[in-house]
Length: 303
Image (tube, rainbow, N blue to C red; front, top):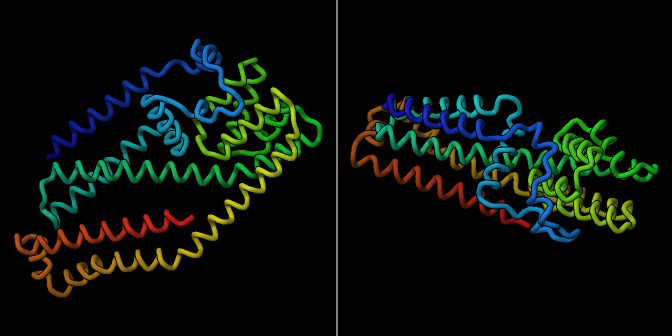
C-alpha cells in the first residue's frame, strides 16, 4: 500500500511539473496581444463575452484562484496537504476501520481535494466581497477629486494591500503600457468572475467609451454591495443556532464511540471489525453524511 501511495504522489508531482513547464514566460504574456483578442470584440454589455471560456481556461482560472489563495509555494503546500490527509487516513484505517487501503486513500484524496478547493474558492470570494466595496469607495473618491480612471486605479492599488488592490494595480499598469481595454478587463473578469465585478467592468467600459455619470453609478453599486454583505451576515446570524445544533447532533455518535472505546472496547470492536456490526458503522456514516448535506443545502438555499 505504501508503494501505491509513493507512485500516486510521483504521478501527481510529475503532472504539476509538466503543467508548470508548459506555462509561457509571464514577461511575454504581459505584453502579448494575441489574434484572439483582436478578432473578438466585446461590447460594453456582453457579460457572457467577459466570462465565456473552454474547459482548459476554466481549469487555469481555478488554478489561479487556488494559487492566489495559497500564496507563495502553492504546489508544495498542496503536496504536503495530500500527504497529511493520506497519512491520517492510513493511521485511522489500520487502527480502527480495516477497510481496503487503496480505496480509502483514493476516497480521502478525492474528498480532501474537493473540500480544499471549495474552502479556498469560498475564502477568496468572501475576501473579495469584503474588500471590493472599500476599493470602490476609494475609487469614487479619486474620481470625484478629478482624477482620471487610470490614476484612480493606481491610487486604489497604493491604498489597498489585498487582491482587489493588486488587480487594480495590474489594470493601471497595463493601461499605461497601451494594452487594449478589452483584453485588460477580459483577463480581470476571468480572475474575479463575480457579478459585482462584472457589473463594475461594464460600467467602467461604458464610461470610458461613451461617457456618463460614473460617480452616481459607483455610489449605487457600493450601496447595493454593502446591503448584500449586511444581508449575508444577517442570514448567517439567523441560521447560526440551527447550524451549531446540526454540528453537535452530528458529533454525538462519534463522541459516543470514543466513550464506548473507554468503557467497553469489545462492543466497539464488534461495530468496527465484526461483519454483522459493520452494518451499524455503514448506517452511521451514511446517515451522518446525508444529514449534514441536507443542513448545508437548507442553509445555502436561503435567499
